[in-house]
Length: 529
Image 1 (cartoon, helix red, strand yellow):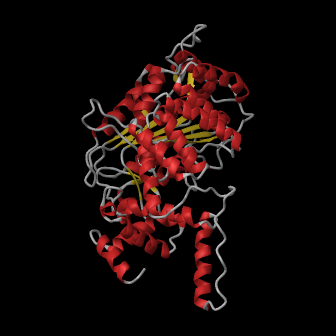
Image 2 (cartoon, helix red, strand yellow):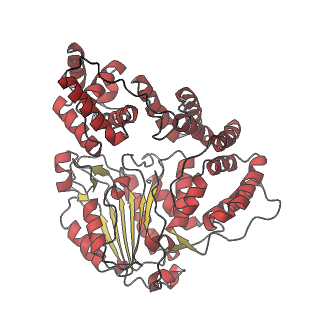
């Protein structure tokens, strides 16, 4: 999920760094960029795609499109075999910045027993007991940012579980900094989602997030301003990744950082000629969407509609997103709110038209509508399956997850505050023992983290337990449905706190013992659990 906060306006004048719209005219002597990447590991397979992405990001900063940044303003932590003095060097680099402090990481991201994001180096250990001792905790990166007097602070994370960077104390700014200070965090994935990279057999394989980010900056954004901010870039990157079936990236913004110009726009600014083809109309509509305010949305919608009526499937999907309120929310920098039935019906109609045109994204959106809004799992399965057959990888993942929840009898589709709430459980019988009453009270206390609803609690338990037991292709996948249900029920019976769910799942699996999961399920069956 994307997270953002509306940038707060400041009455202070902009700094010299932020006032310059063209990066070519900017003085980077008071700025620092720290680039960190790891691609050779002890506990992980080598990742050559990471190495290429690291060098592409470095080359981007050294390109005139971004300034260029001088060599002396860039610190490279490239493929370090061990942590060593990395933390100290990071603090030193960011303390030297008074204009812009930028940190980029690409590689494996993992989390420790406290569910803190850890950026790996060559000998980082996957055992949660050693993760924090052998890798760079993002908490350390955050502390280095807080110590820095830079007025703009940027963190770009291309790794699994990147969204953990904004969990709880996710600010990069210290309270003592002046109001003009701003921060921007770009994340390739959500808190408990993996990031993807191209297969090694692909020529010049790279991570999808960095590749899309760098390609977008180098190509420019047609019709956008002469100077591209991360807000301009993020919108295009997110749309391209989602349309290609990749994980949806996220962001967090504070203060004025959304307005800081990162790169010069290489794309032409000319609008399409009158009577241009639907692709040109779509591009112009999208340009206006990323450049203009929400008050211009009616005119933008009309352009998408004109292209859609000419059979342009991406425009149909965009109209569906507008009907759901997602485009408006992005333009305003807020989260989408509730949607009434007529707007959902309009969205479904546009997605259906896109699907009928052979588009792979339309059926994905239809599957999400039926699963998340209507609670119709059968329809969701149908549409996810159709999108997956058309090559949409995101739909394939959602299909697999939904099928597994259905097999285990879990329904996480109903949302808190919706019309359909979980049926109230009957009160304990009059002859219930004190122990029964205490057990029920503890169960309700545990479910309070999920608004008192059992289905989403079990769904999240299933997700973390699957990952802890080797992932969808590991030991967990070797169990049949009945065995998975027994193990899930046993794990949930321990009432693991939501804040420590992943860590509790790992400890549960370690207690069972790798390779013993089926025997454990058999023991549960014999004991009648």
